[in-house]
Length: 423
Image (cartoon, rainbow, N blue to C red; front, top):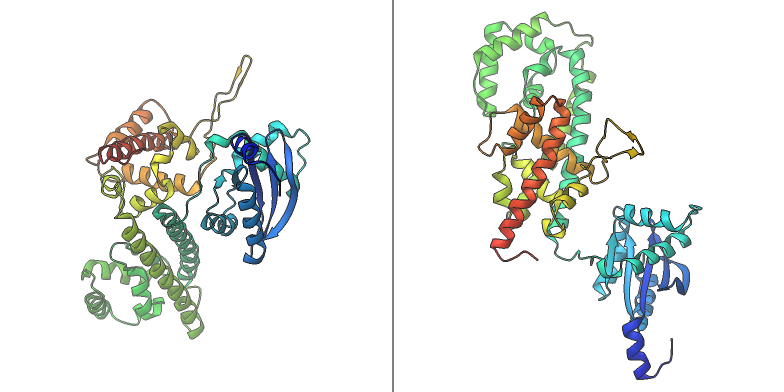
């Protein structure tokens, strides 16, 4: 602890900035105290992510804060940084969580040898904090609806990917027991929560279950099943299924083991469907309280899922300086490569940013081009214009994604200004 006169202390408080750089690992972090001019106030040391070891760090920061302006800076590292950032924030300490790519690019200019240890990383993070002191964003987790939405959205997308993986395995099984049956049924209906294929498999999971009946008997049984499950009773569909079964050649005999295996897959898909419905409903409950919820839902190509997914992945649009910052955040800017007289003829997007956001945006573009022209057709017309210019369809859709984000930013920011909520 430094001993200073009160007058000297006041002057020093206005002049000295102390940045606490924290290199976060899974269960421990390396901490470095640094002042301007690369002055190490305290050499890097390790702390575990427990109250027992973090509380002394809080006490030390508070003592230092009596004399100097102090900020804590750490990289965003998935979920590992959240516990220590939240603990420091709860104790009234300024915490800034910065993009790891920004710190890495900053360090490349400072460290030509590219050496890497936890101690070096913590000092580099502290050095970055000093350099961008005035622009450090403050971490705020408590009551952040966008943070909660992001967590739920990530869970929803993970459940969806897992469901797709299991469904492919079920499809492989059905090609051996009921060839062609998979193509006769639609997928999971997110609006009703029903899955016609799974309901059908609980009644019929092998060709022999169908062809053991006459066509008339199967049609009557199908109509009874459809009425019981709440589906439209379609005799022509039943006849098509029966004809497919009569022509099919199963490669696995009908036995209890085969039936039990298929039911395992059906059960896994049922649980995945329940998780998808629960997470989507919870996301909607949170998103409905946000001003942009109705506005985003009215944009062309946006559906029930993509509306909440877009809001979750983009977050608070006010944190972006302009529409170009949002496009850069999504990783949709072209990677221009020029040197002297050389100029690359193909410039791919940088793809540095949340891949899940780009995935959701691409789903919106697919919805635009695969369905009838929406009332809000600005992005649809833009995609068709690019295709008419000779662009590949995928390139046109990527351009449409950037166009969509420009419109999204403009409309949502205009709404916040009208409500007096814009910064």
